[in-house]
Image (spheres, rainbow, N blue to C red):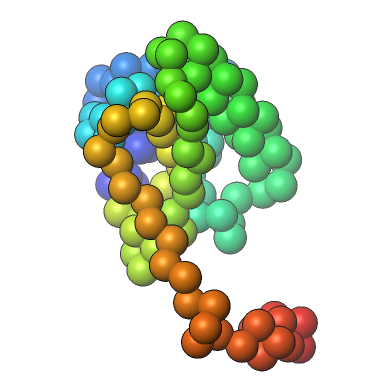
Length: 132
């Protein structure tokens, strides 16, 4: 498999490991979008959230929470973003499931924007499509 995260997990590529157990590994992201930007991923290859099994996902999110608390405290972050991208349209660039932990600081330059489309979205239509 030509997956960069699998190569990191198999220690074929060096990384800065923040946490590791039998199921997951957490590493510092090379991009460091914010100071302490960390990636948490299962050791077994799953392309996205649609494929990962529930037990692995439950364990992974538990570790995400523990690390988010640790990063906030140890790096004196003012907040934390937890981000997960699935599929290219959503910004996924490495097709190995992972969650970003992004420590946030009052004057950092990371922008995550949500555009308000409430005036041009019929919520009943959306709800009907989801539940049909």
